Amino acid sequence: MFKLKGKTILIISNEPWGDIWYSKHNWAYELSKQNKVFFINSPKGWSFKHLFTNGIKIRNYSDTLRIVDYNNRLPFTRFGVLYLLNEYIVTGSLRKWFEKNKVSKTIFWSFDPYRFSNPKLLNATKSIFFRVDKFLLLSNERRLLKNVDGLVVTAEILLKGTQSKKQLILSHGISEEEFKYTNDVDYPSNYFLYVGNIDYRMDVELVEKLLIAFPNETFLFIGKLVNTDNDFFQNIFYRKQHKNMIIHGVEHFKNLKNYIYHSKACLAPMDVKIDGNEIHHHKSLQYLAMGKPIISPIFNDSVNKDEFILGYTNSDEAISRIRELDSSETKQKVKNRINFAEQFLYSNLISKVEDFLSDK
Image (cartoon, rainbow, N blue to C red; front, side, top):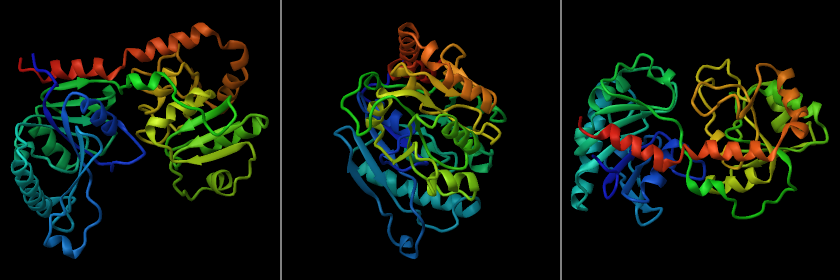
């Protein structure tokens, strides 16, 4: 039986390391508890000087989790011959750095469909591709799928068109650290909370309806604010026409649980008409780990079960779910949500990946 303990793991990320954490950041953090992990950042924009330097820089997040930066050596490396040539040059530089620092027999663990499509160039002994978002299947991703040992997805819909030889459907995960809050926050308790990017993927018309329907409630939005050319969006998030909304900005992922703990309920007001939005909301497990009710459309993953999600199909239903909260909430429902979230602990998911990576 293959064990993910004492190994060296290369996490290939399409999102940089920082305060905002997605699946790849959480997996890197959890795997680093029993392994050495190198989190390989996506490269920044190309400049002429990159022709002459690989730009490899390593910094420690912890003793077992290191962040790797590098430069693309060539421009226009998204597709085609330049992509393949750039990959060969960059992986060669990274491989030399790893060999110099006595790093060998790595596990290639990619979340990026567009970079490093050949794990063997990084001397990987095992390799998987984690597909957590709905991308358009392009040549780089198809090449990656052919070269990895297996494909892991967070919802069945993400298998469509992949034709991978070995597949595993695995939900998003939750750390045992997310079940207890550690400090107070700067706002009075019992607000409605949204955590995530604040951008075009939100159902902004619904957000405005909630703000109008509940003028005496506070709505706290935590996340990166991304400007969107939409009047509703501009009015709400930039002109701040509604006084019962607080835009907090970005908060480090590991501090989000404190804001969740002090909330009355959590929101996932995503516009499911936008392709990819119908799959899942990454913070749902964090909400459930604190026993919080979630007002949300019903997504297509294993986390969003009817008995734990206060689901809606239109604005009127969403408003009704909130109106019913005070009379419908019970201590048993809170406990049930927490118990449900516990089955998605990373320790349980790691066991499933170990079985998946075992030679059979």
